[in-house]
Image 1 (tube, rainbow, N blue to C red):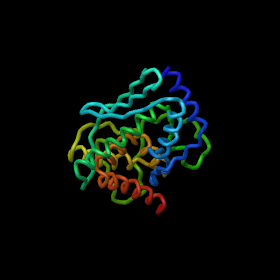
Image 2 (tube, helix red, strand yellow; image 1 turned 90 degrees about the vertical axis):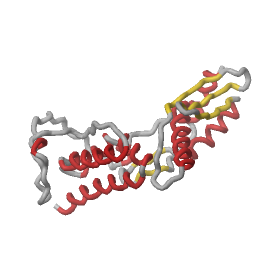
Image 3 (cartoon, rainbow, N blue to C red; image 1 turned 180 degrees about the horizontal axis):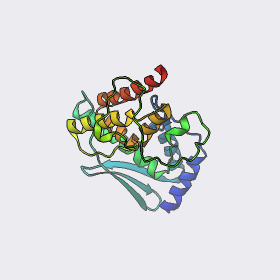
Image 4 (cartoon, rainbow, N blue to C red; image 1 turned 180 degrees about the vertical axis):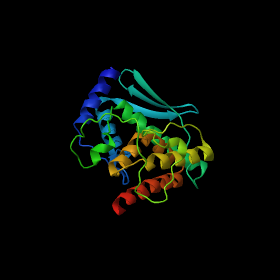
Length: 229
């Protein structure tokens, strides 16, 4: 019965008017926070006779949804990840991790979908399909910009492919961001680069908000160049 009731709960949630209260002001998109949907879910679960309990261990966060009438249950898990908020105590870092995990577990269980960040931006006419060019000339809009010789006449694309941790990783991510932004020709390129690598920047925000703000400043400085030209 638990599967049938969970499906009914999902359908009931579809008919509620959930509002996104979270906002990323730089990228211009809104997202769901826990308080946007948990109250509605609890009311629906109470009506249908379901109970959801979140638990944690060193490896996984778990959401167990139980049908209180027959004891059948559904278990949803998510791998645990660390957070290192600058200036925060260990217990505060733990709280940040648990909050993120609860949000993702409930969104998975209830099939809550967030639109791509592009839906928060002004709609533009679809761009005409353009064949990829083998070479991209470095921008000449800012005097003093120097591009490393190995990247001249090469289009790096927008995706950043890096792994690692700690200060060396932050340094590489910073330099990779600068390099990608060097090839941006307009505000749309800047926005696209951020969106494509959003997972990297969201992870940086969770681990070190101050570092995340430094990355955002790189995007802001690049956008200013276009307004000055």
